[in-house]
Length: 333
Image 1 (spheres, rainbow, N blue to C red):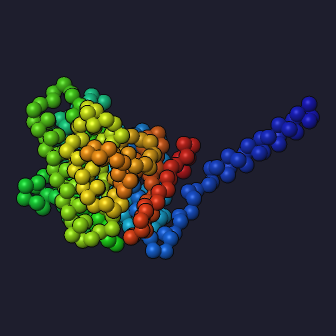
Image 2 (image 1 turned 45 degrees about the horizontal axis):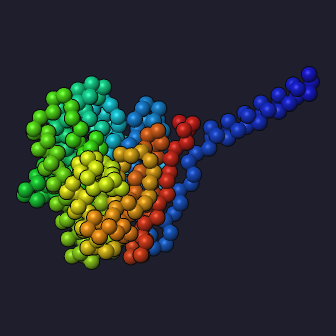
């Protein structure tokens, strides 16, 4: 009995030490950018639940600790409900970061808001509120540091598209385009109208136009790479006739043709799938050849709460390197 008690005491002490270590261990120290590089963050699809919101604060703290040129939020900033209160909570989080923040909306914020659990809102009304709350000043970023942006809304024919923006750093051109999950906002819902369908088509056509204009600008600037960021997973790897993939036409065609013509590195960064993926999924349909110069980054999402650090080496043949950062499931402090 004495030996068993001693063994039990030793085990309890070891367990207490392990728990104490885990409880006090913070985030890993931030890595400096290697010489000749800069880095930025991409994240999305979290927090969905109250406990993930606690973990998300750790993500924000980690982002602030890193030397990032900006933070790119690719949508699904919450799950439900679609209230102004939750919009403003996310806006406060973004504006609290020391880095510039560029945000492109996801389906959770507006296209899915017709669902009873999300508030039973009219999706297009929610989109209007998003544009009013997050994009009051479309030519500058969110965050404590402002980054100057070019907004597609400055084009006379696209005045409402304040969320589609472009900027450049060290010879690389970056752009966001508004594409969402739920089949790019085409999923049926009880009160869907012809106006919802027309808006979805216009939004996708405008996204394709912005992609083409971005690559034209990249060629004019002799840019060494292009980055296109959006929310919805367009099912690049699916057959061309797949209904999900078709929901993202003509954007996919524009990206395909422009990436092939550009013939330099292209990064397509998106969320929606919740699984961390880095691959080369796009095949040029006219030649059946994989576009090796186009890399796809899909960020992790709920139940993983985290972000991806993209380290950029301007002018390199393979300029993008990726680091996945996820808050451990047990960590809330």
